[in-house]
Length: 121
Image (cartoon, rainbow, N blue to C red; front, side, top):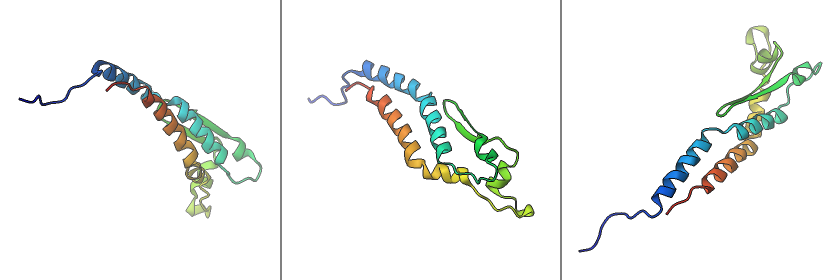
């Protein structure tokens, strides 16, 4: 009678390397930090005095990053304010979309590097 089922060679090594990969994927601080800087470099806020453009700041953590402009009038200029006749100039959204190929590659490279370490048969 023929043997049926699946034989797993190197299962302990596979389990260990997958666990290690999962731990590494839990902290993507490096590509998140690089991504927010890339988006900030692509951003072109409107310039009158230069104060808005120079107020940029970046924050990043293991799962989330933000690019912000630290002047009180940044949100109404970015999103618009219909009641005041201020049209939206969404430079942050445009920058994120324009830079998507670049920042997405940062995450792809990181995930590829992590998954290359997965061993087992």
